[in-house]
Length: 129
Image (cartoon, rainbow, N blue to C red; front, top):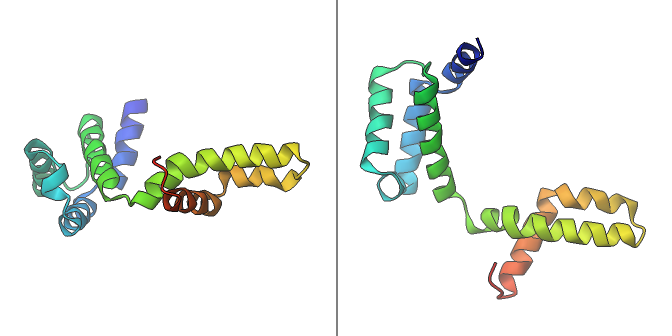
């Protein structure tokens, strides 16, 4: 029963139009041929041609893995650093400020803007991540 529910929800998410848009964006970004293997490209192309809505869980998992590859390839350096370095620094600064008595500093640990600021500062300092 759980598999049918998962396949049904995935079918609403992955359809021909969305996969076509995904392919178009990947081509424009220049990652379609650079990042994806031939089998990945063929899988997406065949799915676009044959399937209206993805209902198979295994096909959905494969397509989502391909989507993730493209997403990681198109992600900017600042965004990647904000997720890795920025959030880590934000957590450390948040803990330090909370120990000094700043109660609102607990929000810093999850503030994406603050993490981005710290990532850019780190990037401009010349140190490697």
